[in-house]
Length: 329
Image 1 (cartoon, rainbow, N blue to C red):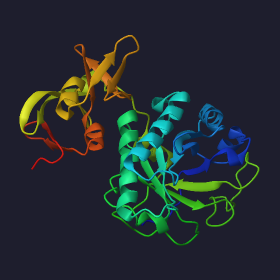
Image 2: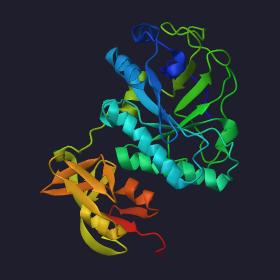
Image 3: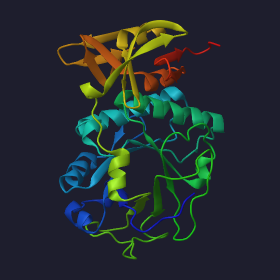
Image 4: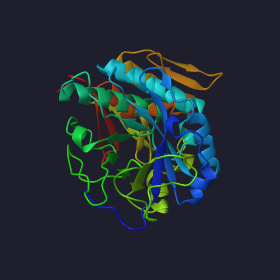
């Protein structure tokens, strides 16, 4: 993978272990972004998350949230419950739209002795559920010694930990580059451009990170997203299920949105629209990225399809968004 370079945006990641943080001093020390621990497992919530997120945003630090997948996650269903806990905590801090950076899956432990296939299944279920609930593609955080457990996840942005001032993280499991590199735990590894590991405003050690690009590059790569596409950017397309046209698709940039009820019918699950609260549910689960078009609720196709094990393809020439259900040839 690539080396660090001069001018890269510098960041930190924090949790309750850092105690009281002076975010104004952190910002003045040259820190541009921060990932803040939100949750762990199916129910744990970091008590400092909301306060840290609000204080960091107030001084202009770009903020993202991360969740630690613990060893109690042994099945995809366990992973989806952890994802629900994570998104619930994000909601309590203002919702995904109030964060500058994508949500992060921190997966680095296997004390349960799961196989590589089982670990990948847990990771994939967590990532897909977070994307389904938020409409934002998550980031994968892990270590070089753990990344080899994953397969088929390299489409997700990578945040890799390797505490060194000279050794770059090795390519693995389909990843050949990193978006974020955690190069120090505050005690060992690389140093900040100021040649120190100490960050003003934080009493003890803190993890140090670097984005592969400038602060402007970081904003461009992971800038704020709106839940609903702008009207002028929306284009019509055809939505097909197993080769049959079932409705209209709406295109906005790289996002494909389809009618909620049509998608629910395709998967054979229930859906409903709570008009008073403007909230949609699919199979009893709340959806966050929803838009109303001519009285119909539209939702993002890909994250929902992937959570059900289905495949999505795009025919650019004929403007067809195609869904192939699980098991179909």
